[in-house]
Image (cartoon, rainbow, N blue to C red; front, side):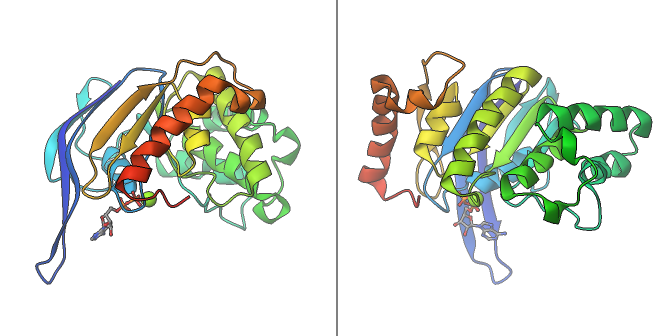
Length: 255
Ligand SMILES: Nc1ncnc2c1ncn2[C@@H]1O[C@H](COP(=O)(O)OP(=O)(O)O)[C@@H](O)[C@H]1O
Ligand SMILES: [Mg+2]
């Protein structure tokens, strides 16, 4: 689905200062795979996602997505940010349809798809509600629907649950697992939470402090569907410890 080779990114400040954010990054992601990415703050995780989303140019390297070389924003990608950034004057359904309008999709088909997505995330009763009438978790579900409206193959999520309280976050993890298994999408989730990364992923990618490189790539061999009891599974604990050790030795993960 995705193949990244030799990716690096240097930010150049106007005064001539340079920041090497990513270096020599190689990664392959299979179709329908769920990948979590963890790494210390400032290691280039958001930079990686912005490059994949085609909204930030890379310095070196090649990226192939769904069989095509990536040169800019791709219709294969849907993006979910930490804050859902919903428009307060639009209803849930209207917010979900915003990208469909911008991309000039068939609006009749898009409206039907919006209804299906709203059902899928359990917001059937709220299609005509306004964002302020929803909880944080519900708003983030709307953000996920909006990212899926053009039916991308690949969902990129940048710390989507970071602003939610712990209990809502657990619910959203279960919800995301369900959405992923129903939709068959490929997902790359950036998170500060090691348990969240392990709970959701087929593979966890661990990055070093800046300049970001991949130091570990761990296949998570735990049965699915996973429920919250998984957190007390000894093997789950071993994966969490293995990831945590990277940060104990190389500086801390700020979570
Ligand atoms: N627009 C920018 N200009 C210059 N430096 C940047 C810019 N965006 C990010 N950086 C720097 O690149 C590094 C990686 O940032 P980022 O990808 O946001 O990290 P993360 O998401 O892992 O916390 C950081 O040191 C950050 O300060
Ligand atoms: Mg970030």
